[in-house]
Image 1 (cartoon, one colour):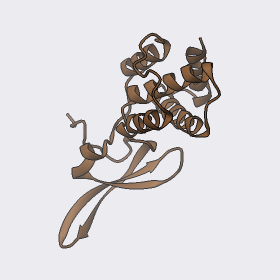
Image 2 (cartoon, rainbow, N blue to C red):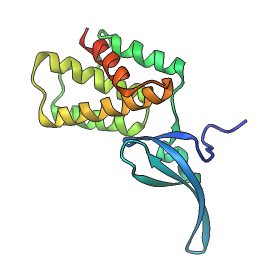
Image 3 (cartoon, rainbow, N blue to C red):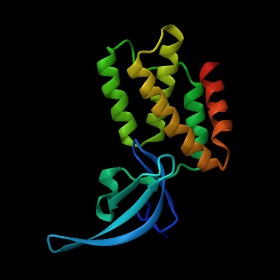
Image 4 (cartoon, one colour):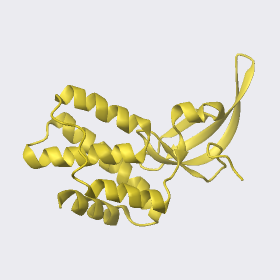
Length: 166
């Protein structure tokens, strides 16, 4: 059985704050006389290519797509408006927390950011920075769930939106 941090060509993987990518190659490169293996990851949404050292997969946060059970847990979190830990921290503090959660690569953390910003949006107009974070969180969440469930992003976006607005 394949280890969770080992990938093969064609596998889909999530790179924190960039989204879902496809392992297009596994290459060896020599730096300072030391040979290292790299995953060549093409990000689906942006067509950007990232080289991830095989030995640094854990530190970078590269991980497999969520499974259907994990998707159900994400949906439950989005619908649960009662579990708000945030409070009324300043935007700069919240922005730092939100960016840390997004960079973690954990889809549950991304879902928390999205849910919290939607709740704030109900009370006031979001600032430019808040809107940018909301869009990034929505893009990362929707694209991963769409690929995990094999459904169109538009359908997932509509479902997520309806959960967050109820």
